[in-house]
Image 1: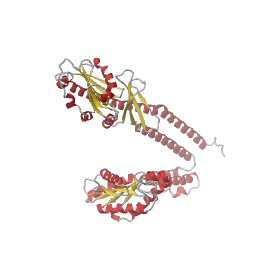
Image 2 (image 1 turned 135 degrees about the vertical axis):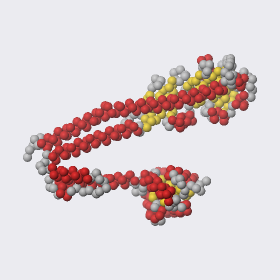
Image 3 (image 1 turned 135 degrees about the horizontal axis):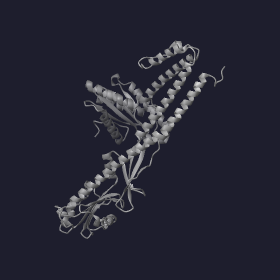
Image 4 (image 1 turned 180 degrees about the horizontal axis):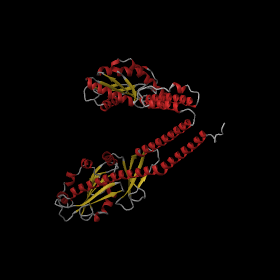
Length: 528
Protein backbone atom coordinates (compact mmCIF):
# COMPACT_ATOMS: atom_id res chain seq x y z
CA UNK A 1 0.00 0.00 0.00
CA UNK A 2 1.57 3.31 -1.04
CA UNK A 3 2.24 5.95 1.54
CA UNK A 4 -0.27 8.82 1.52
CA UNK A 5 2.18 11.31 0.01
CA UNK A 6 3.33 8.88 -2.71
CA UNK A 7 -0.22 8.19 -3.88
CA UNK A 8 -1.17 10.25 -6.91
CA UNK A 9 -4.70 10.54 -5.60
CA UNK A 10 -3.50 11.98 -2.31
CA UNK A 11 -1.06 14.29 -4.06
CA UNK A 12 -3.87 15.66 -6.18
CA UNK A 13 -6.03 15.95 -3.09
CA UNK A 14 -3.31 17.80 -1.21
CA UNK A 15 -2.53 20.10 -4.15
CA UNK A 16 -6.16 20.91 -4.90
CA UNK A 17 -6.82 21.40 -1.19
CA UNK A 18 -4.00 23.93 -1.10
CA UNK A 19 -5.46 25.70 -4.14
CA UNK A 20 -8.83 25.78 -2.41
CA UNK A 21 -7.38 27.31 0.75
CA UNK A 22 -5.40 29.90 -1.21
CA UNK A 23 -8.47 30.78 -3.25
CA UNK A 24 -10.56 31.22 -0.13
CA UNK A 25 -7.85 33.36 1.47
CA UNK A 26 -7.50 35.44 -1.70
CA UNK A 27 -11.25 35.99 -1.99
CA UNK A 28 -11.43 36.94 1.68
CA UNK A 29 -8.63 39.47 1.23
CA UNK A 30 -10.29 40.88 -1.89
CA UNK A 31 -13.53 41.28 0.01
CA UNK A 32 -11.87 42.85 3.04
CA UNK A 33 -9.37 45.11 1.27
CA UNK A 34 -11.19 46.02 -1.96
CA UNK A 35 -14.89 45.17 -2.01
CA UNK A 36 -15.89 46.33 1.47
CA UNK A 37 -14.00 49.68 1.34
CA UNK A 38 -15.52 50.39 -2.09
CA UNK A 39 -19.01 49.62 -0.81
CA UNK A 40 -18.50 51.79 2.26
CA UNK A 41 -17.26 54.66 0.10
CA UNK A 42 -20.26 54.30 -2.19
CA UNK A 43 -22.52 54.26 0.85
CA UNK A 44 -20.86 57.44 2.11
CA UNK A 45 -21.51 59.12 -1.25
CA UNK A 46 -25.17 58.09 -1.07
CA UNK A 47 -25.35 59.53 2.45
CA UNK A 48 -23.82 62.78 1.22
CA UNK A 49 -26.36 63.05 -1.61
CA UNK A 50 -29.28 62.42 0.74
CA UNK A 51 -27.99 65.02 3.19
CA UNK A 52 -27.66 67.42 0.25
CA UNK A 53 -31.35 66.83 -0.45
CA UNK A 54 -32.26 67.61 3.14
CA UNK A 55 -30.09 70.71 3.11
CA UNK A 56 -31.76 71.88 -0.12
CA UNK A 57 -35.14 71.36 1.53
CA UNK A 58 -33.97 73.49 4.45
CA UNK A 59 -32.76 76.18 2.04
CA UNK A 60 -36.08 76.07 0.17
CA UNK A 61 -37.93 76.62 3.44
CA UNK A 62 -35.62 79.53 4.23
CA UNK A 63 -36.28 81.12 0.83
CA UNK A 64 -40.03 80.63 1.19
CA UNK A 65 -39.99 82.26 4.63
CA UNK A 66 -37.92 85.15 3.27
CA UNK A 67 -40.40 85.70 0.44
CA UNK A 68 -43.26 85.82 2.95
CA UNK A 69 -41.33 88.26 5.13
CA UNK A 70 -40.84 90.61 2.15
CA UNK A 71 -44.53 90.36 1.24
CA UNK A 72 -45.48 91.65 4.67
CA UNK A 73 -42.64 94.15 5.04
CA UNK A 74 -43.20 95.75 1.60
CA UNK A 75 -46.81 96.74 2.27
CA UNK A 76 -48.29 100.18 2.73
CA UNK A 77 -50.30 99.07 5.77
CA UNK A 78 -47.17 97.74 7.48
CA UNK A 79 -45.31 100.91 6.53
CA UNK A 80 -47.99 102.96 8.22
CA UNK A 81 -48.29 100.57 11.18
CA UNK A 82 -44.67 100.93 12.36
CA UNK A 83 -45.18 104.71 12.23
CA UNK A 84 -48.21 104.49 14.52
CA UNK A 85 -50.78 105.21 11.78
CA UNK A 86 -52.66 101.87 11.75
CA UNK A 87 -54.04 101.29 15.27
CA UNK A 88 -56.16 98.27 14.19
CA UNK A 89 -53.38 96.62 12.16
CA UNK A 90 -52.49 94.02 14.81
CA UNK A 91 -56.13 93.25 15.59
CA UNK A 92 -57.03 92.77 11.92
CA UNK A 93 -53.94 90.88 10.73
CA UNK A 94 -52.78 88.80 13.70
CA UNK A 95 -54.51 85.71 15.06
CA UNK A 96 -53.62 82.30 16.34
CA UNK A 97 -55.08 80.64 13.24
CA UNK A 98 -52.93 82.86 10.99
CA UNK A 99 -49.76 81.78 12.80
CA UNK A 100 -50.77 78.12 12.68
CA UNK A 101 -51.76 78.25 9.00
CA UNK A 102 -48.54 80.05 7.98
CA UNK A 103 -46.43 77.90 10.32
CA UNK A 104 -44.97 80.99 12.03
CA UNK A 105 -43.80 80.96 15.62
CA UNK A 106 -43.04 84.63 16.04
CA UNK A 107 -43.36 87.99 14.24
CA UNK A 108 -41.55 91.07 15.53
CA UNK A 109 -41.88 94.65 14.20
CA UNK A 110 -39.04 97.08 14.94
CA UNK A 111 -39.14 100.83 14.47
CA UNK A 112 -36.43 102.73 12.64
CA UNK A 113 -34.37 102.96 15.85
CA UNK A 114 -34.35 99.18 16.27
CA UNK A 115 -36.76 99.21 19.20
CA UNK A 116 -39.58 96.68 19.43
CA UNK A 117 -42.81 98.15 18.09
CA UNK A 118 -44.98 95.04 18.19
CA UNK A 119 -44.53 91.33 18.86
CA UNK A 120 -46.94 88.45 18.24
CA UNK A 121 -46.61 84.70 18.24
CA UNK A 122 -47.17 81.35 19.93
CA UNK A 123 -45.11 80.41 22.96
CA UNK A 124 -43.38 77.07 22.10
CA UNK A 125 -43.43 76.01 25.75
CA UNK A 126 -47.08 76.70 26.61
CA UNK A 127 -48.58 76.86 23.06
CA UNK A 128 -50.36 80.08 24.08
CA UNK A 129 -50.86 82.84 21.54
CA UNK A 130 -50.00 86.41 22.51
CA UNK A 131 -49.87 89.80 20.77
CA UNK A 132 -48.13 92.62 22.65
CA UNK A 133 -46.54 96.01 22.20
CA UNK A 134 -43.38 94.86 23.98
CA UNK A 135 -41.74 91.57 25.00
CA UNK A 136 -43.13 91.54 28.50
CA UNK A 137 -45.95 89.81 30.29
CA UNK A 138 -47.58 87.32 27.92
CA UNK A 139 -44.82 87.98 25.36
CA UNK A 140 -41.87 87.69 27.75
CA UNK A 141 -41.02 84.29 26.28
CA UNK A 142 -39.86 86.03 23.08
CA UNK A 143 -37.36 88.35 24.78
CA UNK A 144 -34.28 86.17 24.23
CA UNK A 145 -34.79 85.69 20.51
CA UNK A 146 -35.73 89.37 20.07
CA UNK A 147 -32.37 90.33 21.55
CA UNK A 148 -30.63 88.14 18.95
CA UNK A 149 -32.75 89.72 16.21
CA UNK A 150 -31.89 93.28 17.29
CA UNK A 151 -28.19 92.48 17.07
CA UNK A 152 -28.61 91.78 13.34
CA UNK A 153 -30.84 94.66 12.27
CA UNK A 154 -27.99 96.90 11.14
CA UNK A 155 -26.58 94.14 8.90
CA UNK A 156 -29.87 93.38 7.15
CA UNK A 157 -29.55 93.94 3.41
CA UNK A 158 -31.95 96.07 1.41
CA UNK A 159 -33.74 93.01 0.03
CA UNK A 160 -33.80 91.27 3.41
CA UNK A 161 -31.57 88.68 5.08
CA UNK A 162 -32.16 85.17 6.35
CA UNK A 163 -30.54 83.49 9.33
CA UNK A 164 -30.24 80.09 10.97
CA UNK A 165 -30.64 80.23 14.76
CA UNK A 166 -29.76 77.64 17.37
CA UNK A 167 -30.69 79.50 20.55
CA UNK A 168 -33.13 79.74 22.17
CA UNK A 169 -34.55 77.20 19.66
CA UNK A 170 -33.40 75.82 16.30
CA UNK A 171 -35.23 78.08 13.88
CA UNK A 172 -35.30 79.76 10.47
CA UNK A 173 -35.33 83.55 10.62
CA UNK A 174 -36.10 86.14 7.97
CA UNK A 175 -35.67 89.92 8.41
CA UNK A 176 -36.60 92.61 5.90
CA UNK A 177 -36.70 96.43 5.99
CA UNK A 178 -40.22 97.87 6.08
CA UNK A 179 -40.95 99.69 2.80
CA UNK A 180 -43.99 100.80 0.86
CA UNK A 181 -45.75 98.35 -1.46
CA UNK A 182 -43.83 99.75 -4.44
CA UNK A 183 -40.61 99.15 -2.41
CA UNK A 184 -39.93 102.85 -2.10
CA UNK A 185 -38.48 104.24 1.10
CA UNK A 186 -37.07 105.38 3.25
CA UNK A 187 -37.24 102.27 5.49
CA UNK A 188 -39.32 102.84 8.61
CA UNK A 189 -38.19 99.79 10.55
CA UNK A 190 -37.81 96.07 10.16
CA UNK A 191 -40.03 92.99 10.19
CA UNK A 192 -38.70 89.63 11.44
CA UNK A 193 -40.40 86.25 11.24
CA UNK A 194 -39.31 83.08 13.01
CA UNK A 195 -40.21 79.52 11.99
CA UNK A 196 -39.14 76.74 14.37
CA UNK A 197 -37.37 73.63 13.10
CA UNK A 198 -39.59 71.59 15.41
CA UNK A 199 -41.20 68.16 15.09
CA UNK A 200 -43.95 69.51 12.83
CA UNK A 201 -41.37 70.96 10.43
CA UNK A 202 -39.35 67.73 10.55
CA UNK A 203 -42.50 65.71 9.78
CA UNK A 204 -43.15 67.92 6.75
CA UNK A 205 -39.63 67.35 5.44
CA UNK A 206 -40.07 63.61 6.00
CA UNK A 207 -43.28 63.67 3.97
CA UNK A 208 -41.67 65.60 1.11
CA UNK A 209 -38.35 63.77 0.93
CA UNK A 210 -39.19 60.36 2.35
CA UNK A 211 -36.32 60.73 4.82
CA UNK A 212 -36.71 60.91 8.60
CA UNK A 213 -34.93 64.04 9.81
CA UNK A 214 -33.97 65.61 13.10
CA UNK A 215 -32.37 69.00 13.77
CA UNK A 216 -30.57 69.52 17.06
CA UNK A 217 -27.92 71.88 18.45
CA UNK A 218 -24.51 70.49 17.52
CA UNK A 219 -21.33 70.06 19.46
CA UNK A 220 -18.04 71.29 18.02
CA UNK A 221 -17.52 70.12 14.43
CA UNK A 222 -16.40 71.40 11.09
CA UNK A 223 -19.28 72.78 8.98
CA UNK A 224 -20.28 70.40 6.22
CA UNK A 225 -18.81 67.31 7.91
CA UNK A 226 -20.66 64.02 7.48
CA UNK A 227 -20.59 61.68 10.46
CA UNK A 228 -21.64 58.05 10.04
CA UNK A 229 -22.65 57.19 13.57
CA UNK A 230 -23.60 53.55 12.85
CA UNK A 231 -21.36 51.59 10.51
CA UNK A 232 -21.36 47.92 11.56
CA UNK A 233 -21.41 45.53 8.59
CA UNK A 234 -24.70 43.91 9.59
CA UNK A 235 -26.60 47.04 10.67
CA UNK A 236 -29.80 47.55 8.68
CA UNK A 237 -29.79 51.34 9.15
CA UNK A 238 -27.09 53.93 9.39
CA UNK A 239 -27.50 57.26 11.12
CA UNK A 240 -25.76 60.09 9.27
CA UNK A 241 -25.50 63.73 10.18
CA UNK A 242 -24.13 66.97 8.82
CA UNK A 243 -23.15 69.99 10.86
CA UNK A 244 -24.55 73.29 9.56
CA UNK A 245 -23.06 76.58 10.78
CA UNK A 246 -25.62 78.82 12.46
CA UNK A 247 -25.86 82.61 12.21
CA UNK A 248 -25.07 82.87 15.91
CA UNK A 249 -21.29 82.81 16.54
CA UNK A 250 -19.86 79.55 17.78
CA UNK A 251 -23.07 77.59 17.25
CA UNK A 252 -24.12 74.99 14.69
CA UNK A 253 -27.00 72.67 13.94
CA UNK A 254 -26.78 68.91 13.54
CA UNK A 255 -28.90 67.78 10.54
CA UNK A 256 -29.45 64.03 10.99
CA UNK A 257 -31.28 61.29 9.09
CA UNK A 258 -31.43 57.50 8.91
CA UNK A 259 -30.72 55.61 5.69
CA UNK A 260 -31.28 51.94 4.88
CA UNK A 261 -28.18 49.89 4.15
CA UNK A 262 -29.87 47.60 1.64
CA UNK A 263 -27.24 48.10 -1.06
CA UNK A 264 -24.20 47.17 0.98
CA UNK A 265 -26.04 44.31 2.70
CA UNK A 266 -27.17 42.88 -0.64
CA UNK A 267 -23.69 43.26 -2.15
CA UNK A 268 -22.02 41.59 0.81
CA UNK A 269 -24.56 38.77 0.71
CA UNK A 270 -23.93 38.29 -3.01
CA UNK A 271 -20.19 38.25 -2.44
CA UNK A 272 -20.57 35.60 0.26
CA UNK A 273 -22.75 33.52 -2.01
CA UNK A 274 -20.13 33.81 -4.74
CA UNK A 275 -17.42 32.76 -2.31
CA UNK A 276 -19.47 29.74 -1.25
CA UNK A 277 -20.15 28.85 -4.87
CA UNK A 278 -16.44 28.94 -5.71
CA UNK A 279 -15.65 26.72 -2.74
CA UNK A 280 -18.40 24.27 -3.67
CA UNK A 281 -17.23 24.19 -7.28
CA UNK A 282 -13.65 23.49 -6.29
CA UNK A 283 -14.77 20.69 -4.00
CA UNK A 284 -16.65 19.15 -6.90
CA UNK A 285 -13.55 19.44 -9.10
CA UNK A 286 -11.48 17.68 -6.46
CA UNK A 287 -13.99 14.84 -6.31
CA UNK A 288 -14.04 14.49 -10.09
CA UNK A 289 -10.24 14.47 -10.33
CA UNK A 290 -10.04 11.73 -7.72
CA UNK A 291 -12.59 9.70 -9.64
CA UNK A 292 -10.64 10.13 -12.89
CA UNK A 293 -7.60 8.52 -11.25
CA UNK A 294 -9.46 5.28 -10.79
CA UNK A 295 -9.44 2.52 -13.40
CA UNK A 296 -12.30 1.88 -15.78
CA UNK A 297 -14.47 4.83 -14.84
CA UNK A 298 -15.14 6.50 -18.17
CA UNK A 299 -18.33 4.62 -18.99
CA UNK A 300 -19.90 4.87 -15.50
CA UNK A 301 -18.79 8.51 -15.44
CA UNK A 302 -20.67 9.15 -18.69
CA UNK A 303 -23.72 7.38 -17.25
CA UNK A 304 -23.42 9.48 -14.16
CA UNK A 305 -23.04 12.63 -16.26
CA UNK A 306 -26.15 11.81 -18.29
CA UNK A 307 -28.04 11.28 -15.07
CA UNK A 308 -26.95 14.61 -13.62
CA UNK A 309 -27.93 16.36 -16.85
CA UNK A 310 -31.38 14.83 -16.61
CA UNK A 311 -31.85 16.57 -13.29
CA UNK A 312 -32.20 19.84 -15.18
CA UNK A 313 -35.78 18.84 -16.01
CA UNK A 314 -37.65 19.48 -12.72
CA UNK A 315 -40.90 18.08 -14.15
CA UNK A 316 -39.59 14.51 -13.94
CA UNK A 317 -38.76 12.40 -10.93
CA UNK A 318 -35.22 11.09 -11.17
CA UNK A 319 -33.33 8.34 -9.43
CA UNK A 320 -29.70 7.34 -9.67
CA UNK A 321 -29.23 4.50 -12.22
CA UNK A 322 -29.41 1.08 -10.59
CA UNK A 323 -26.16 -0.03 -12.25
CA UNK A 324 -24.25 2.70 -10.45
CA UNK A 325 -25.97 2.03 -7.15
CA UNK A 326 -25.09 -1.68 -7.36
CA UNK A 327 -21.33 -1.10 -7.68
CA UNK A 328 -19.20 -2.09 -4.69
CA UNK A 329 -16.32 0.25 -5.48
CA UNK A 330 -15.84 3.97 -4.93
CA UNK A 331 -18.09 4.86 -7.87
CA UNK A 332 -20.90 2.81 -6.35
CA UNK A 333 -20.30 4.50 -3.02
CA UNK A 334 -20.38 7.90 -4.70
CA UNK A 335 -23.59 6.98 -6.53
CA UNK A 336 -25.32 5.93 -3.35
CA UNK A 337 -24.18 9.03 -1.51
CA UNK A 338 -25.42 11.18 -4.37
CA UNK A 339 -28.79 9.47 -4.25
CA UNK A 340 -28.97 10.21 -0.54
CA UNK A 341 -28.05 13.84 -1.14
CA UNK A 342 -30.64 14.10 -3.90
CA UNK A 343 -33.35 12.73 -1.64
CA UNK A 344 -32.21 15.01 1.15
CA UNK A 345 -32.25 17.98 -1.22
CA UNK A 346 -35.77 17.11 -2.34
CA UNK A 347 -36.86 16.76 1.27
CA UNK A 348 -35.27 20.10 2.12
CA UNK A 349 -36.87 21.76 -0.88
CA UNK A 350 -40.25 20.42 0.17
CA UNK A 351 -39.59 21.54 3.75
CA UNK A 352 -38.48 25.01 2.63
CA UNK A 353 -41.59 25.34 0.46
CA UNK A 354 -43.70 24.38 3.46
CA UNK A 355 -41.88 26.88 5.69
CA UNK A 356 -42.20 29.61 3.07
CA UNK A 357 -45.99 29.24 2.97
CA UNK A 358 -46.92 28.22 6.51
CA UNK A 359 -46.40 29.51 10.04
CA UNK A 360 -43.90 27.35 11.93
CA UNK A 361 -45.74 27.55 15.28
CA UNK A 362 -49.38 26.94 14.34
CA UNK A 363 -49.02 25.23 10.97
CA UNK A 364 -51.47 27.72 9.47
CA UNK A 365 -50.86 29.55 6.23
CA UNK A 366 -48.64 32.61 6.56
CA UNK A 367 -49.15 36.07 5.10
CA UNK A 368 -47.37 35.16 1.84
CA UNK A 369 -49.78 32.29 1.12
CA UNK A 370 -52.79 34.27 2.35
CA UNK A 371 -52.01 37.24 0.10
CA UNK A 372 -51.51 34.95 -2.91
CA UNK A 373 -54.82 33.15 -2.29
CA UNK A 374 -56.61 36.45 -1.75
CA UNK A 375 -55.34 37.78 -5.09
CA UNK A 376 -56.49 34.59 -6.84
CA UNK A 377 -59.88 34.69 -5.13
CA UNK A 378 -60.50 38.32 -6.13
CA UNK A 379 -59.51 37.64 -9.74
CA UNK A 380 -61.92 34.68 -9.83
CA UNK A 381 -64.68 36.71 -8.18
CA UNK A 382 -64.26 39.56 -10.66
CA UNK A 383 -64.32 37.12 -13.61
CA UNK A 384 -67.38 35.22 -12.34
CA UNK A 385 -69.27 38.16 -10.77
CA UNK A 386 -68.79 36.56 -7.37
CA UNK A 387 -67.89 37.89 -3.96
CA UNK A 388 -65.14 37.41 -1.40
CA UNK A 389 -65.10 37.94 2.36
CA UNK A 390 -62.11 38.36 4.62
CA UNK A 391 -61.78 38.47 8.38
CA UNK A 392 -59.11 39.78 10.69
CA UNK A 393 -59.07 38.22 14.16
CA UNK A 394 -57.07 39.46 17.12
CA UNK A 395 -56.79 37.77 20.51
CA UNK A 396 -58.01 40.23 23.13
CA UNK A 397 -55.33 41.41 25.55
CA UNK A 398 -52.81 38.83 24.44
CA UNK A 399 -49.82 40.79 25.80
CA UNK A 400 -51.20 40.68 29.36
CA UNK A 401 -51.78 36.95 28.76
CA UNK A 402 -48.12 36.49 27.79
CA UNK A 403 -46.94 38.61 30.71
CA UNK A 404 -49.10 36.70 33.20
CA UNK A 405 -48.76 33.11 32.00
CA UNK A 406 -45.41 33.25 30.20
CA UNK A 407 -44.41 32.99 26.54
CA UNK A 408 -44.63 29.19 26.44
CA UNK A 409 -48.24 29.37 27.57
CA UNK A 410 -48.77 32.14 25.03
CA UNK A 411 -47.48 29.88 22.25
CA UNK A 412 -49.73 27.08 23.46
CA UNK A 413 -52.68 29.49 23.45
CA UNK A 414 -51.93 30.49 19.85
CA UNK A 415 -51.83 26.82 18.84
CA UNK A 416 -55.19 26.16 20.54
CA UNK A 417 -56.83 29.10 18.81
CA UNK A 418 -55.31 28.08 15.47
CA UNK A 419 -56.53 24.49 15.85
CA UNK A 420 -60.02 25.74 16.69
CA UNK A 421 -60.07 27.96 13.59
CA UNK A 422 -58.77 25.09 11.45
CA UNK A 423 -61.47 22.72 12.71
CA UNK A 424 -64.21 25.25 12.03
CA UNK A 425 -62.82 25.91 8.55
CA UNK A 426 -62.72 22.17 7.81
CA UNK A 427 -66.44 21.94 8.59
CA UNK A 428 -67.36 24.89 6.35
CA UNK A 429 -69.16 24.51 3.05
CA UNK A 430 -66.74 23.35 0.30
CA UNK A 431 -67.66 26.28 -1.94
CA UNK A 432 -66.28 28.77 0.58
CA UNK A 433 -62.77 27.30 0.29
CA UNK A 434 -61.82 28.80 3.68
CA UNK A 435 -58.17 29.64 4.30
CA UNK A 436 -56.96 30.43 7.83
CA UNK A 437 -53.64 32.25 8.20
CA UNK A 438 -51.55 33.64 11.00
CA UNK A 439 -50.53 37.08 9.79
CA UNK A 440 -49.11 38.59 12.97
CA UNK A 441 -48.16 37.79 16.55
CA UNK A 442 -51.69 37.25 17.87
CA UNK A 443 -53.40 38.28 14.65
CA UNK A 444 -55.08 35.85 12.26
CA UNK A 445 -56.76 36.33 8.91
CA UNK A 446 -59.42 34.22 7.22
CA UNK A 447 -60.53 34.11 3.59
CA UNK A 448 -63.95 32.92 2.41
CA UNK A 449 -64.49 32.61 -1.34
CA UNK A 450 -67.92 33.05 -2.92
CA UNK A 451 -69.33 34.18 0.43
CA UNK A 452 -72.14 36.67 0.94
CA UNK A 453 -72.40 39.04 3.90
CA UNK A 454 -74.68 36.87 6.04
CA UNK A 455 -72.56 33.76 5.56
CA UNK A 456 -69.38 35.63 6.50
CA UNK A 457 -70.93 37.21 9.59
CA UNK A 458 -72.38 33.87 10.67
CA UNK A 459 -69.04 32.16 10.22
CA UNK A 460 -67.27 34.93 12.18
CA UNK A 461 -69.76 34.73 15.04
CA UNK A 462 -69.41 30.94 15.13
CA UNK A 463 -65.65 31.36 15.23
CA UNK A 464 -65.83 33.86 18.08
CA UNK A 465 -68.15 31.60 20.07
CA UNK A 466 -66.00 28.53 19.40
CA UNK A 467 -62.90 30.27 20.77
CA UNK A 468 -64.79 31.41 23.85
CA UNK A 469 -65.97 27.80 24.24
CA UNK A 470 -62.33 26.70 24.46
CA UNK A 471 -62.55 28.19 27.96
CA UNK A 472 -58.89 29.23 27.98
CA UNK A 473 -58.30 30.98 31.35
CA UNK A 474 -57.26 34.65 31.06
CA UNK A 475 -57.38 36.25 34.50
CA UNK A 476 -55.27 39.19 33.23
CA UNK A 477 -57.93 40.25 30.69
CA UNK A 478 -59.84 43.47 31.53
CA UNK A 479 -62.94 41.91 29.88
CA UNK A 480 -62.70 38.84 32.13
CA UNK A 481 -61.90 35.17 31.69
CA UNK A 482 -62.01 33.11 29.48
CA UNK A 483 -59.89 34.27 26.58
CA UNK A 484 -61.85 36.12 23.87
CA UNK A 485 -61.23 37.47 20.38
CA UNK A 486 -62.33 40.46 18.33
CA UNK A 487 -63.12 40.00 14.64
CA UNK A 488 -63.43 42.47 11.79
CA UNK A 489 -65.22 41.38 8.61
CA UNK A 490 -65.07 42.95 5.16
CA UNK A 491 -66.66 41.82 1.89
CA UNK A 492 -65.88 42.53 -1.75
CA UNK A 493 -69.10 42.22 -3.73
CA UNK A 494 -68.52 44.30 -6.84
CA UNK A 495 -65.48 45.33 -8.92
CA UNK A 496 -62.98 46.80 -8.91
CA UNK A 497 -61.54 44.42 -6.34
CA UNK A 498 -58.55 45.74 -4.40
CA UNK A 499 -56.96 43.28 -1.92
CA UNK A 500 -55.20 46.05 0.00
CA UNK A 501 -58.38 48.08 0.36
CA UNK A 502 -60.33 44.99 1.41
CA UNK A 503 -57.81 44.14 4.14
CA UNK A 504 -57.80 47.77 5.31
CA UNK A 505 -61.58 47.59 5.67
CA UNK A 506 -61.30 44.39 7.70
CA UNK A 507 -58.58 45.96 9.84
CA UNK A 508 -60.76 49.03 10.42
CA UNK A 509 -63.65 46.79 11.45
CA UNK A 510 -61.32 44.88 13.78
CA UNK A 511 -60.27 48.06 15.55
CA UNK A 512 -63.91 49.10 15.78
CA UNK A 513 -64.69 45.74 17.42
CA UNK A 514 -61.92 46.39 19.91
CA UNK A 515 -63.21 49.89 20.58
CA UNK A 516 -66.69 48.44 21.17
CA UNK A 517 -65.41 46.53 24.18
CA UNK A 518 -63.73 43.54 22.49
CA UNK A 519 -65.19 40.03 22.20
CA UNK A 520 -67.19 41.42 19.26
CA UNK A 521 -67.69 40.76 15.57
CA UNK A 522 -68.13 43.86 13.42
CA UNK A 523 -68.63 44.22 9.68
CA UNK A 524 -66.84 47.03 7.87
CA UNK A 525 -70.02 47.97 6.01
CA UNK A 526 -71.93 48.37 9.28
CA UNK A 527 -69.15 50.02 11.29
CA UNK A 528 -70.10 53.66 12.02
